[in-house]
Amino acid sequence: MPLFNYLRKSDFNKAVEFFENGYYAEALETIDRALARRPRHVDAWNNRGAILASLGRDEEAVLSYDRALTIEPGHVIAWNNRGNVLDDIGRHTEAIESYDRALAINPRHTGSLNNRGYALASLGRYDEAIESFDRAIALDPKFVVAYVNRGHALDAIGHYTDAVESYDKALAHAPEYVDAWALRGCSLFSLGRYSDAIESSEKAITIHSNFCIPWYIRGAALEALGMHKEAVEAWEKVVDFIPETRFHWYYRGLALARLGRNREATKAMDEARFFARLRILDPSDEEIKRAWERKVTDQGKC
Picture 1 (cartoon, rainbow, N blue to C red):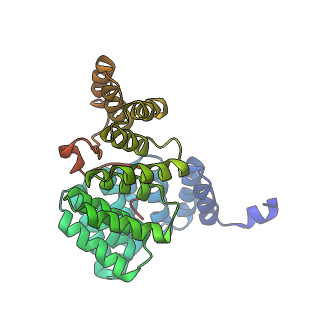
Picture 2 (picture 1 turned 90 degrees about the horizontal axis):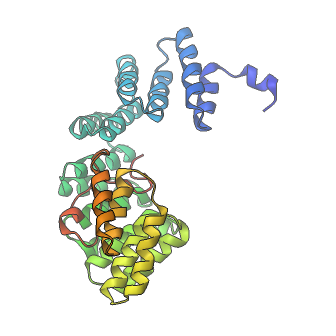
Picture 3 (picture 1 turned 45 degrees about the vertical axis):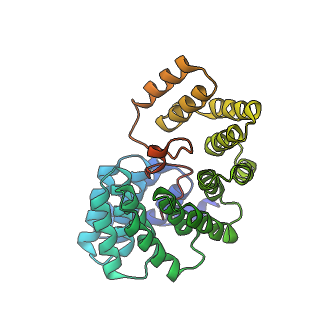
């Protein structure tokens, strides 16, 4: 951008530009300058919340959204964003209250409906979550994130065929949606459709080759078909791809156990306990399968 054009931009717009390009510290400094000049700039407070959340300063982000809502109680986006941060830090009930406030102002806000469903599912309230996703989809029949979240909730209550149908609807609108292919493979595994699960997982792998979940599902399905050598190769991929987070340590432990490397598997599971709580779908573990709180590529909320 030419220097003159940059200098003409307001601090608010500069902050937005910094934020969109991932320069969060610079964005925060710039939005604070904007607020020093206009302390009641409601969108600046909202954007400040988003910047702080991106910096991992979640409690401060909530306070920024609160400031925005003190100035403009009917700010739907601020209510929605506030809910997202609360949900991310495990305060799911408060998050739902924020989404409900957004929806009281605008009942057709599909993002809040989807995110409300996501939070409800985090509490194990799957039927209510599905109802919320259905409302979002009724307003926007091409809302692929809501279809995927709906499929995941259906899977959690054992409605695997309906879950596959929901993923298929998402993929009809977004054929490269990697989460949909991976989770579809998990539901197909639960239906005993192992070859279809492998095909779905391979599609996810084609899109995102170092995404460990479809590799793990592929390995489980291959083993179920008696293809042990190929299964081992898939689980070795899981071990190769995963860095040190609880999510990935968990999958490392599962893969190592499948490979018969029990000492390493136990160590990996012990490591997982040191990280933030995160339960993950596993096609071979019924208890874990019914859990919701997980991260795939973090496309669940809006």
